[in-house]
Length: 353
Image (cartoon, rainbow, N blue to C red):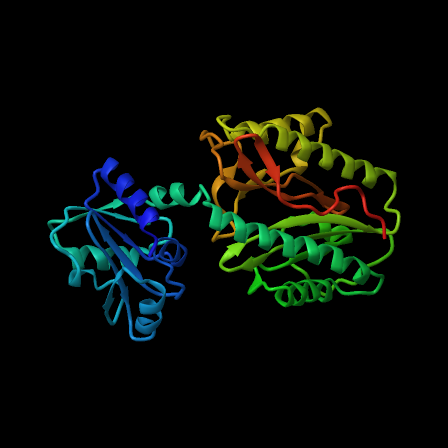
């Protein structure tokens, strides 16, 4: 159990006038207690923390969550076993099903009110501590190494799925527990698909090959994208690559402590618009990375929050022209008091194989 994190949660609960908080998102359970099982419930009050788990996890919870009161239940929503009349109870509206919400209402009874408060754990998890940063750096280093490893495998006639499989195998061999999401390898015209999951397309000469991948190391994720070329792709595509690279640079320099997060995406979009290319950039500029591959802070034009120290996030502009090609470059970065520190180390100069 992490006392510091629970104390921070209780402080946020108090400022939101919450008497308790029920959490069931696996990433939140791990963050606050160290419990790595896939199913459980955590009931936090001003004084105590109860971890509700079934018989599959009681022994595991006892080993992982020392200091936390383990309560054996048949279902993790049996909160009436640890409920002491709290009136205002926070819950994670972003991950709790409506069915479970209704079940909790019945378990707590008419005297209690469930309050949507998923922002509280999200805000805490957005600021990484030193132990988290160390694991993230390792996950990033494994992905960087995988990028260098995969380059000799990129040849004519190779299937996209074979590249994805090799990346997965290599990262696991280097210490990852698995990929942090389904690996994207999209070549040729398919590179215009921002989430073009690897398939049976065979690589051909002069094609762009877009690869988006990352791994999980001790529960923490990494994420990176590079676009390389299997032979000279032509001047137009190389020019497009240069535009994306410059756009990413403008995104990075607009990520500063205390500066509104939306400024970064707006700077990139403004640059693309000046070249009449903004219509080909359809997704957000980036997202936070940690226990989940997508978490706070979301680096998009709607985020009015400001950058804070120890936020970890991506900057990943892309231009995708349907029926032609796509280019994306993605780095992970951590915000420091001196400004952004780019964690991804793989080269961004155009690579022609």
